[in-house]
Picture 1 (cartoon, one colour):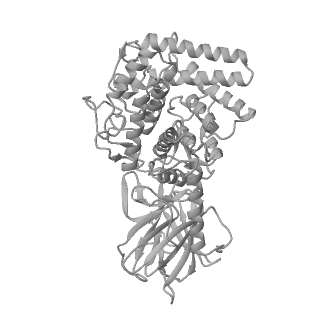
Picture 2 (cartoon, one colour; picture 1 turned 90 degrees about the vertical axis):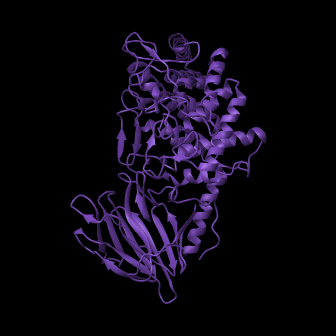
Picture 3 (cartoon, one colour; picture 1 turned 120 degrees about the vertical axis):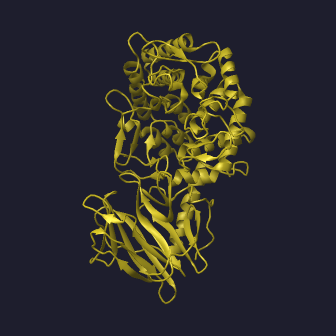
Length: 583
């Protein structure tokens, strides 16, 4: 049908097929942990909603045909014994399809239409196209037949329960072509701007250019780098709804939001090769900073949640981001970042410190990002050392920013606050072996076998040597053949698929690896990096992984996992091949 596809092949049951900037994808995953028999057009406007079902069939009104799905970044194919169908993105809101030997039934995923849900279907008298209108997404989906013919049209203008859809079948040559558009209210009739082959070639090139920009350092020693780039590229959506900038969602499966610490890792991975997109990722949550200075827990197309927050890793992230961006931030950008980071820090200092307390607290495990960590079993409202460690790094970054912006008095004040907080966290939470968590109500302290208690290693060079050495030794007890278990495997509370009670997570890995390296524990940092990279190369970019088997768990196409792989892989290549800049 077209030239041989380029780019990494991937399993569409694990990673959805999508185009950069698009708010919809093609996948059998239709909701959390649900995989359908057929591929669906799944939209992420207004939530995750399967809108159209795409079924390969034999002829007009024919029975469903078994096919194999093959996916690369620019092309998705159904391959059967009698023919094949190819799908590609023309642009963010438009698909091109072409088939020979196989017909394609496009029908509404929802079986019932009510006054408030489902999909309405008409044959548009304006241009002869077919139009599906989705209550769930608030958008329309237009099917324009470009070659071949439509057949077996059912459910036009029907209400209630009905089979709504049409079948695309070949003409005398055996071929058919169509376009599928996601649109708001109306647009001019569809007119192809190019052939299907050229459209697919352009989709291939668009991804390749992105991958070359973001991973110019990739080598055979980093075999998952190109696929990691695809996960990021395909999960990016254009500005829409509450997201006013291009945004990298955590996934185009059910984790289709941006959370207020996940975005930092994506910004860091993108910074050298896609600096504008990276800067948007760092800033995107600050666009919704509230009056107290807090960042929302998450933002997506039609929802902003403020009921929880996430840890203040943004000072740590900004320091690394400024080093990775190919240009220095302008004074305007520095000033804006300073004020946003200042308000975020004051939230923790003013709104999360009980009277008479020096150290801030979380109100729930969700605030830490480690939702159900065993560190929160004795009580949900906890003073934990990881929170203070991240805030210390943020205050130090504020001090440096204030110095650059000629705010000497403020720089001195931020530096003093950081020193005061660090002295307090060691004085109040360090046991001599590890850090404990305390109740801000009673002052009672407890320790756990959660890696969370060891996260102050993120302070790196700022930690006293004896503390970083003890932390490093304890971190090593969490290291399995695949990486850092979030709950020590010999803990009675360890769970293989326990979310933050055992599985390996990307953000913890990156933060620990970076802290160890800055504290001088280079060999352990190298080992953690190597094991996590090998894990991703074997098991992909899942939300988290079984610490003992390495199996990918939960959402299987998670961008911060892909970004963490890219960060560790790039750093590894640059350590062994200094000066590496190209593939």
